[in-house]
Image (cartoon, rainbow, N blue to C red; front, top):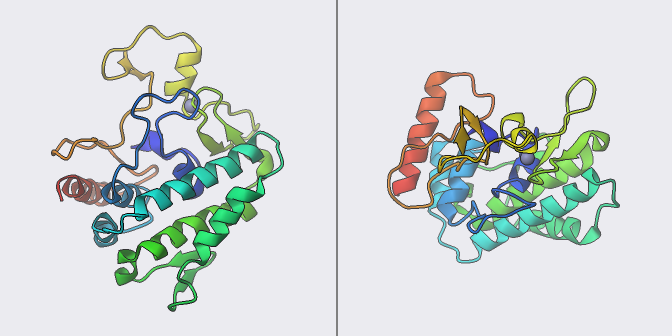
Amino acid sequence: MPEHFIGGHAALDLSNAVYDRRNPPLHNELFNSPRDIGTWLLAAGLADEQEAVAVAEIRDRHFLHEVRDIRESSYALFDAIASNLEPPSQPLGLLCSRAANRLGAQQVAWDGTRLALASDQWEDPALVTAFLAFLSIEAFFTLPRARLRVCPRCGWLFVDISRGGKRRWCNMRVCGNREKGSPPSGPSGIVRGKMTTHPAPWPHSSHIVGSGFKHHGASLCHRRARRELTIRLLQVC
Ligand SMILES: [Zn+2]
């Protein structure tokens, strides 16, 4: 869903792949299985349907934790930059280490500064983690640091591309409203058509539930419908 892709760069969206950084709820984790990672890659527009399914079917027991490590390292790095602190070396070191994984063992292609994995390479957990790590390394060297922001409510990161550079919230409908003291929300987190919490991007259960997960900025309805259909299929694989 659009609310989960507000970073302005895939590395920031990856860093934001939890519900809340500042006041984490009991179930704050969005990556609970390789299937969740495949779903995220598809929704982010980084993988197609077939590639997302390949990721969802990865059985390596370390894969999930390594993706979480990359996400947390990205967050630590960009949160420091957004807070005008010196970028810490340790998370950057982890990202470089993961990015180098397996590159010496086989040929990979590049799309500019990003890894362009072949269809069968999405089955390789080390190459998928390398792909994600390179996103953050790319962002580290290319994002305009003076425009990197952290939402004061939820801690999500984003690039402020507003003309005046005064954007404060990840999403005005979510965190902006909370700041204004919206009345208590119902179970859906929606009050009079306004969200007060980040909505779930996909169900945590393994049952079919209609997913509202959409790619931010997607313009082709039928492409979006196809993507959402695949996401639903990923929920039940
Ligand atoms: Zn926020």
